[in-house]
Length: 420
Image (cartoon, rainbow, N blue to C red):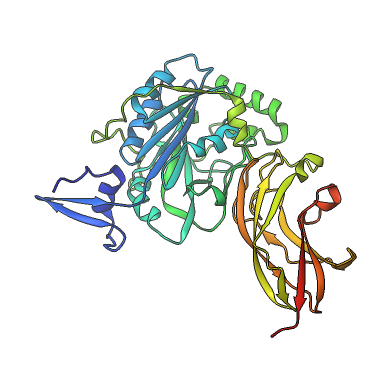
């Protein structure tokens, strides 16, 4: 029997973690074990003009991640793109977005792993974080993790800043690659929003090398650009150090050192052409600010196999097919606006309103413009026998009814009879 080589993070799993034999398959070949784990990890990075340091992060990433995906700012004027092309699995040249958060929703869509770890180009994971990654990803309850980040100081790279605003510095950077639970606002200095259970990790960390890799002039220029984009969120206090006498630093903990350039790093995937991506494509993946104008209230709803005879006061599951014909994505509740719901009204046979407050059905997943979803909508029949009209409608709570914006849903004649 010929087995596949160990994935990088799987080998670490065998070395440091007790293995649940029911989760995967274990093969013994000669004197070595081969473990075929079912979870895969994508490491994603956005970078610009990082030729002096990005290669180390890429090589470290290949030691534990199943794929390394990099978006290189097309305005880079050094060897960044070439270095990434030679050391990452997939590389994209993206039209300059102005700030990295703008491309993160699109970058997430490029990742194929079950989990995503996102790092900045001037960061490195610690050895402790790499060691525990397999156990974190195999925890069936967790959907995301908050990691500690240490900001390094000094050219010798042996100390980090241990005072506010640089410490404690929690970052949500490791999460399941499930689009319906992940929301990325895409605004300057905004983070990820992920539904489900999480943990704050006190073992393992991220090391941030901005003060090591970049000089003061570079940081001043970055702050100037941020203040133009969003003055209230420029984060300028993170880029200016106090005087030396006020600076509090600590040595790197011996049990959680920054990851080194692993000689056992797997080779990158075969070099593929670098695809250029413009901002129009990037912005399609963004969480759009909701404009409750007329264009939002466009949809097509079809009622499928609705019973034409119902027993009085009884619940039925009626299948509907819904198509989003607006220019805005409709997320699931609590993951952004607009909160679109399917509902209905009962009219008497002559068209007069009988019961306006039908059950509201939430969307089972995000519905992007042009997409269609089929779902069962609970419908309760009128309590009194007679002939009625089931009138379908849609609503955005606290905003508007679709029917009040000129939209018209299907109307189905229904005979209601006494319970048998």
